[in-house]
Length: 190
Image: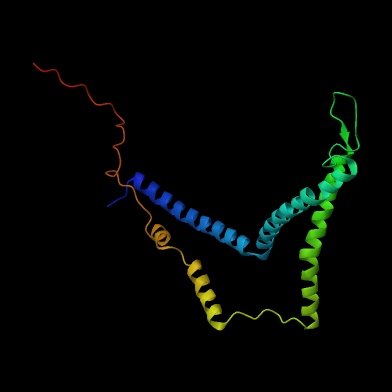
């Protein structure tokens, strides 16, 4: 029994789908590796901590620095202090730049004294042997991690089915193709 040209095209399309699925699996595997690397996790933690410190520093500026500036300069913030320019036009405001510089310095100091300095001290203690290294995972945890990795490396049943038995299209499965020769007109009835 010979296969129609439509069926062989579908078979090659199924094979292409199977190879595309393998390529897609490689893309997702690479994405999973990227996510689980320390760099991406560290970056995500840094963004979250940075947002939290931004809110913390903004509250210090709003609750402490701006009232002090208001007492000294008579204005609640530095935005309009040291501003000059022609009347009716936007002034050049060095106070706005100074306010941003103060916020930056407070943020940098908070990050340094709350995150960097304690972590450096912890690393120095570990180097001297005062602070023990974190314990290695237990043997059963290592075994479970190995099983998880082996299961993740296996292809799914649906992917295996698509690769081993690519779908074929039979002429009876779809709409009938248009005829290559138009049908003859009906015979006249007498």
